[in-house]
Length: 302
Image 1 (spheres, rainbow, N blue to C red):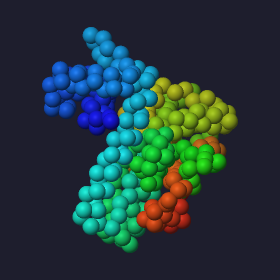
Image 2: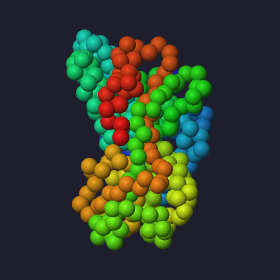
Image 3: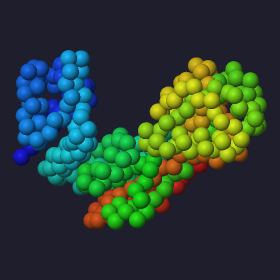
Image 4: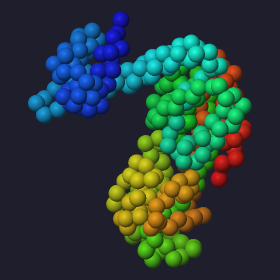
């Protein structure tokens, strides 16, 4: 039987890539931590880490075990939380995975507000996770609902999904950029400009889709930097480091020094999907799924 404590130790070392820092984080000594990791490797029959004097890093097998361990620990945490909720006599709980855009666009907050209004005793646990990790969580039943940038396949026998938001993209310009004074911007205006790319963690293909949309419009973006979050890209734009395409839903979070413009001739958007397990959908999960697909979420589509 695997030791959950050892699995937590393994995750801490994998995330810090340093036994000493992991030991400080866990409030234990370095030597016992090293022994626990060695015992876990012996129990599994795998080498989880490549070790050198400078650092410790995951092997290929270690990366695979790390993904499964995180899902296992999430499930264990959910099980413990469920026992506590039942002990307190609460009516039920939801474990929801999400990506940042679900918050920025208002989809998740609005749906939760509506659900809590009708069911004030529910307990909700939120997990900010990459889309692929959320789908694993659904399959392993550690998540009830996932809000993802890339849905499961339409013929997936276990998971169902529906789009809840198709977020159009806006051009973000430094306020002192000459184009910021133009209400209508043509593709030729953007040729040769410095760009800040947006490589979404939730949907890695989004960056390629943006480049393809630019090429279809008649120019190739000169990408000087790449950010993984829209708010980071907006901060770089505000600093005058280039222009970027960001989701419409983050426009209210744009810092001073940023001007946003619509580009109707470029077809590029960021979708948000709700996903769930098809089997044994609890009434509470079904109610929240209905809100996302047919209810509150539709009000925030833009």
